[in-house]
Length: 423
Image: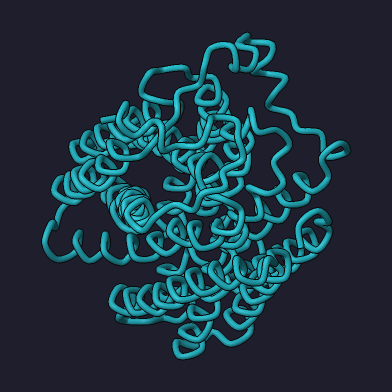
């Protein structure tokens, strides 16, 4: 099957010019739906409950958050290494199955097996080990899959195609939570369900995707020294890459601080007696606006040929939403804040991904450079629970957390305004 489709893929180091079709985009979006369901359902529901079960006699809710945060932070350290390393290795892969496909398949299998094993864990050490392995699998899979955009999608289609990374993120979160709370209840069934769905949804794209083989003569230097040196992209030589990366880090930290502790904010900041039910409502609102904003903004940015203004407005919207949560801690206002967060983050996810593909320094290192960019998405999510719990404790409650979230959003808007090579 790979050999039949190899001639439909652009040459490995060429800039793609032919638009990808509806089938490619549909399978690409389905793969990301499986990925986000498998990654976000544990983060938002399964892991916190699993950790809480181990610490049910803890003196304070922050003890559980800190334990969850430590586990997430350890996994984040491995993500910091795995994203760019996988990208660099896939850039150098000369397999007859293509450059990206072996890494997509291997990452999906590791991710799914680790999730399945998590369903059996009853101790914090085991939870930490298997969640770290799950995140490594997630990083390997998503690094290779993201590189497929710059490999195969022309610039004037990347905003719309990138929206099919972000829109499934929101849908995957709510679908995964619904499945884990209605059909596949309990620790084992919840993890098993998302592991199976991950494989089922990623496999069609992995098998069908055209993926041109890299000739060994075209392979970048394959030495430890070359790999290590390649991890550094000089912001002096490539300032737009540096500003785009900075913007992505700042905005994602702001978003993570504003959303990761929403359940605890509802329970202890709003004193909501129906916090779990209302969290689902907030997730639904957030989801709707993420999906609409990501698809609409991605397509419009392609049509107008502009990226920066969309990313700047998206960052500001998230900051405004965080200010609302900080100064008006009331459930109705929180719902408005969820809508603004979704609107801003949906726009940011699709257009910023397209922007990132246009500031890459070298076609031969697309995978590695996008892997570096992906760090800015995954690591903030990993460290946010621990950082958020510390901020709530040190700054006297949730208002300080949301104020800091807003500051990161405004800083991200400033950073993207400094990009010069992309309109």
